Image 1 (cartoon, rainbow, N blue to C red):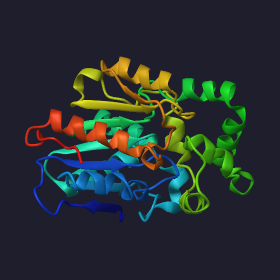
Image 2: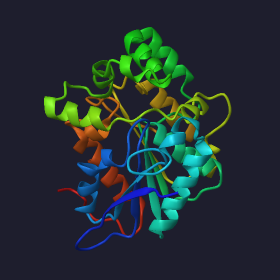
Image 3: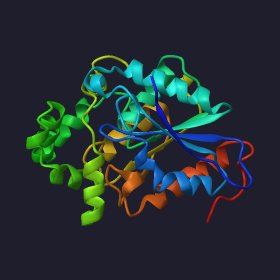
Length: 272
């Protein structure tokens, strides 16, 4: 199966660790290309972004709703092998769940960053919280999951993803690239059975979340930190789509600083 793997390789000095971004549900590798990929590459990190099967320009769209987490974990294994050398995986939302399941199934990574990620305990708590706090958004997501695309109010979903109104051009670009949901994988992430690795088996990890996130609220980010024994970083001005926020650079700075502090060969300052 042909998979899309975008790359942005530094032109000058290259650091000793590569970064692989994994997108969330209904998205693709493109979501990282505008901001995070060039930002990290300019600071010396070879940077890649994978479109999981059925997403972006990858094959497998005809079976998108039936793919399992194990299938997406296999895509991640392929990408890590293609890159070679030590790789830090950055997973957003569903992509964070896929990254955890990759480790659960024995995959290896030098490090992992969970960004507004599906938590190790599953999405059930967050789903009930959304139902109580924002039932309109919950209902639109239910329609999207059930494939009732023509009746989905994407404006409601957009307002749930971003902390500020999108411009007309940005909105058109975002909505034109949203795909259908990977329903089976999303249901697996609800937490009916374990999908995450044991906390003492994981590589170095960073956990980021948005203070205004309607999808993965701060309490679930904090609970992810409790599970892995880490203190998460909550970005107060960010909603769910951190990489598309006007304040995306704050998250990118935290990521670059963590990479520099954690990995040998990446210990120089990473400020602009």
